[in-house]
Each structure stands twice: as C-alpha cells, then as structure tokens.
Image 1 (tube, rainbow, N blue to C red):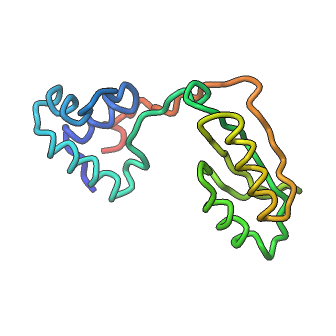
Image 2: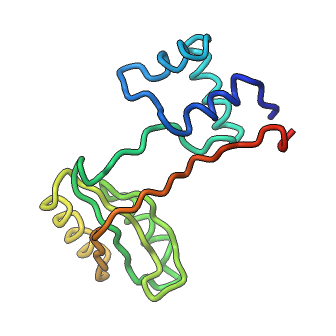
Image 3: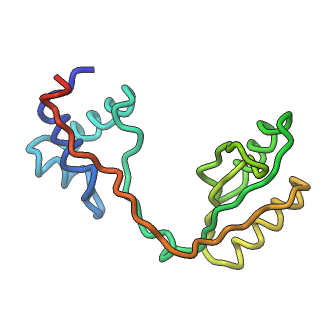
Length: 154
C-alpha cells in the first residue's frame, strides 16, 4: 500500500491525541479538510493493509474500574482449549502464552473489585486451575507513538 499525504497525516497526528468527543472522526476530518466518511474509509483501509493495528483511545483503566494481570499453568497439550475458555470470560483481554511455569497470561477487567474477584473465582472453578493474581502496584506509561521518517521509508 502506498501512503499519500493524508494517510501520513492521519498516522502522524493521531498516534496520540485522538479526539475524545461524540464524533472523533468528524473532528479529525475537519482538521484535515476531508470528509468524515473519508477518514473512516482511510483508517479502515490502513487497518486492512495492517499499517494500523488499532484505532481507539487508551485510557487510565484504574479510573474506570478494576483490573489485574493473571496467569495459569496449563498443560502444553491443553493450551489452546484453556486459552479459548479464558477468552470466553467477560473482561478478558491480552491473553498470550509465555515460556514459564505459568504459561498463559491474561488481563482481566471488571467494573469493580468485587466483580473482578467473582469472575476470577468462577473462571478458576471452570478451569480447575489456580489463577495467579497480580494486581498492579504501580503504573508505568509506555508511549507507543513513533515519529516516522517518511523520507527514509520512501
């Protein structure tokens, strides 16, 4: 996919500072001098070509509910089945395999601590595996935005 000036502006301007408002694509469109439909179409195409992996805000999750990092020690022959059961649970994201005794890791979120504990207890019973629960002690912000040298990529 060959990126034009508008595609590059979408990437450069909105890796950070995605408008948080009722119609963010319209606000982006107004700033870029194109239509809202064109912004949506271009972002969809950029995702389709895997130039973008995700479009959306990142927020401070601890202010919007409860979450923690969790892990289970799954038998290697059951990894896929256990991962599928974990993924069916409400609030689960970032489920991935690691080379460790606890080899399946995931983040679980919930509206509050009580609901989070209930979901983890229920999942533990369904899996018949102990869930290692690792609440966040301190948050770190990793800025995943990059200044792109478009000339070097041409």
